[in-house]
Image (cartoon, rainbow, N blue to C red; front, side, top):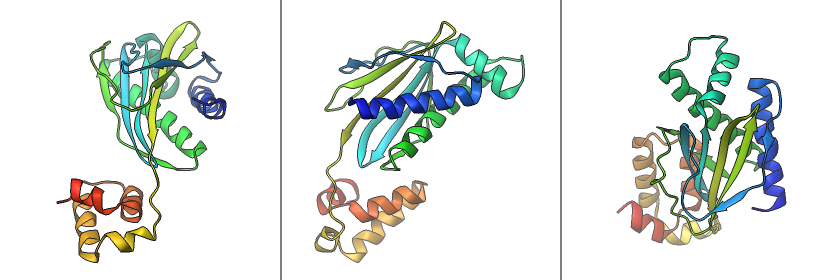
Length: 201
């Protein structure tokens, strides 16, 4: 992870924590991990697609999430459902802030929420994953991000590779999968013949 990317992510973390808890957390230096996730009590995992392909996850201790639920929902009633919802919401907020800082060069999937330290879950990426330790008033969390840069295909190449009928088939399939409209437009712009043959035939 370059210093510029870490600076962007660092700022995104501070923005989210300030919004919810009113103060910055302590953010540690990125730790490289080859495959495994560094997990706390609750974890939300999101897929990255577009110009980048990979995974982003936010994992938090129960104590930190409890403080976030109380601060955001203005309630002392804490249950598993609210903790699950909160870890997913925080991951979405972090992903949105990072996506905005990257000028929208990638798309984020809906989060998959997990309870417990399930260390058998692994990344399957070409490059290593960077895990950023986060601590707020001695309560711990981690933000992990691992991605590969996807080689861009010039839009002009599209006319050489795909027919109108093939483009319409891609559009129809992705609409049925309820993919975000922006992601559909991106795929229609950059998909090549090899990708079409692998995924849509």
